[in-house]
Image (cartoon, rainbow, N blue to C red; front, side, top):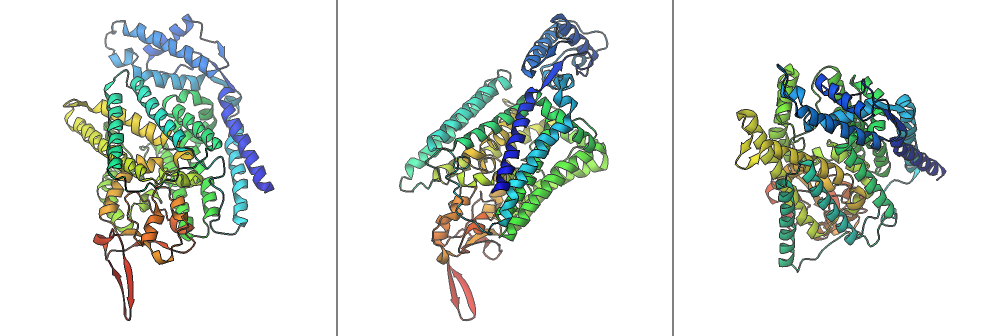
Length: 593
């Protein structure tokens, strides 16, 4: 216990230092720190900054510096946009577009930083990442000394892991949806069409679920909602949500963190760090450290150990290190395990052009991505179910299984949640398909409009709503509030694609020996995908659900060996039969329906 206390103390110190870093640096604007890709832009920005006395002024707060610099950019933008184009100069080089403002702000803030963090990045890396890793491992390693197996560990009694009451959960969801739609209005520069469309779709889905709920009153509602609220979990969720909001939409406020990891980025890729390198490094470290915890907890089950090692390998080597090395070799940044439609920008024009202009390796990457999507996904899923990707390869799944494992019991097992799940995840898949068709149409024809849809606007809204708000802010930020697979269960379009194949044409299923079930409920409690596994076990019915990611934890926590993950081709067409009875006679074993 002493080692655990030391570990958690070191981790909390690292987290406090990590958070406090955002206010430790000061900022001073100079001619050299202004980051632009045009001499006209730089000259005008410098003139406007000198006019308001910003050049050479020391700012102790990034908020004040960013606020003043944004005002300078707006003045420079208005000044240049009101002038005539010089001869031989393109509009893109002379005028400051709205797309320049975010990049100029981020790079300039990064170049203007000075102080403790900027002067000592490696020291702060050791005080945050180093101390956090050490503290995490010291807290986890004593678990290897305990008796293997799942025990009653009071997951619903701890403030961090007991989740939210139903009412508070609904309030969080409502506030999130409203916040995303309102922010989306400003993100789309005042365009009301897509925020209103999203709101209408949300209301339609709610109406459909409530309508079918009313039609089937006789079906009981099996919910895993707790009676208490874990305020430490709420704090953790809010912290994660705040991190993702800054990461996606205001990375300039994260400059000290980015400067801290720049030396590591320069070693791997030869380039200064971006917010995405910071995120990738943080993501990878968490998967590794919490992967050790996962192994300690489920070490009695070889399937869980190997599966955890797999997601640790794919995240560290394939998703993080290999793409950075490719950049150092002047090749495209490419994650070989990412698949459309999860990798929703794979068919965007800039990505297709980059790959085709990068020689034979780029062409291979393009062909690899297409073949994996069109042939690899259905073929491998037929033999192994969606678990081959969702539980063994995927980075989102890897984070959910490691960092998110303490919150897996918070997934709602109610029938109402399942209905929402089906409508929402397949709507996202349909959205991804429509967007991809539009961007490919634009790529091959040069026309941006198809009926009332503009391909640029559609992909911008998809990137904001699905790629950022849903996958990041909600997908990870809601771990302590709604369970660790919120994104995988309700939003991931690739999970929907894999699930359709698994449901209708796959050898994978979880077989049930119902006669051994004692109705303890461990399987349902630990199911992160909201499946009431006990209901299937009590009926002796094999678990064949499109949402099942085949993590196998239900089988690992079953005290009677009732559940078993299997791939069998003999009865693919009849896997979903309600009840099955095993008939054992001399010389034969048969399954009777």
